[in-house]
Length: 443
Length: 95
Picture 1 (spheres, helix red, strand yellow):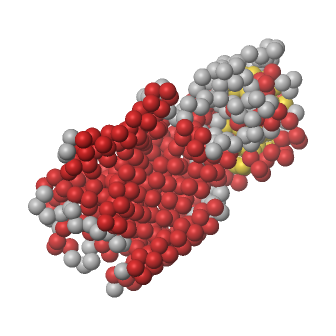
Picture 2 (picture 1 turned 180 degrees about the vertical axis):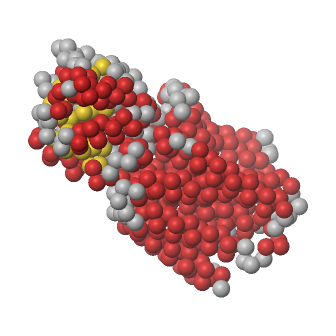
Picture 3 (picture 1 turned 60 degrees about the vertical axis):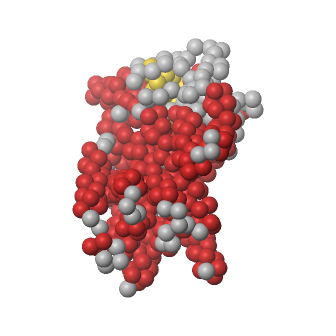
């Protein structure tokens, strides 16, 4: 009977992933996955609920309610932090389970290795995710990379301490300590704009930790589900890396970006006003908006929606061009736009829209920088050379809404800003869009 | 014993392969809900906690650690699915 429940659960998990393939069926995917999860958890009890005391049931109910509460209250702009936090919880749970199994002293040797693996990955995911959350909240600056490198070299020696001091029974605790510190240091050296890779990578690790926990307790469903999560995380990680033309190793090494390397311009940018932008837009037939992290910081989504409506009312075509690493996690911009009811049919990927820029009348760059920097195509010495970018410089006119000429994450000047077809609207993303809308009413 | 271990490895491989194939087809628009959804699934480690809880024996410390694992995993599952539902709801009404 249990086997049949588990079989149904596995199949439901796979179907859920299949349904996830289209925005129109994706909400059903979530229901399928929830059902699969409920069956899998139910099966673990093996119809014997009396083996568990009240502490067990109280823990489940309280943490379940807490989960619902958190998820209902969180804002869409805080989604990267929330996903990071939950990643940490999943990894931490697997790590704790592996630790308990190792302390039980009854594992066969092969399982000991799997358990240590699961524990290290789980604990690393836990501490790494918590650091990622702090970085996303802006509570932690980039950790000194040199110091981190020195730390990393000496870190493994901590494991030798119990051997030297003849405290063999503390070995496991010391391994946990190393994994904890390693997680903290590894993530601490990675800059903010590399967070989409970090979050996806930690997501994958939490799946791998769960999968290896499945090997220890001999649960096939745990292995299957863990493997699915591991695979999904790896795919997203590699997609994010490809979108920056960097390897995973290079990202994890850290130390990229955050400091200005070169921010000099040969000429002054042309600055514009909301009124002029409104006039320009009213003569356009096609408009493409390129949102970046600046839109999320300024919470400008609602204003963007209003501008989109205003333009569409005038029969102007509006599209959104979304770079894969825009924002702080995969798909971040899409969620913010969906939140304000912008149709996902209007959101385009880099491959789909790049050929259209040359025939676009006006492009509005809203809080994005490196992902529209033409140096990625032309300057072989540039740190972003070879990164796929949105070719907005080919459009007839470009409006860049940005507070100053400060460089983006890569720390380099963006020649787009002084291009002949570009004008700068120096203001906050939200204020800028709102003022353009107001000017429209006057035009 | 050997045969079951190999079978388990085969299942692991097949699951990873199916996962890779299906997830590669998911559009960029859905990458955030995909992450929060798969994130919720990684809380399935709750099963391991349920399985070992009755067997931890006398040690209060180990029991507390398992309870912490249960709390983390439950938060991960319930919170993860709930927030994924919220995100997907936003995509649904656009149909």
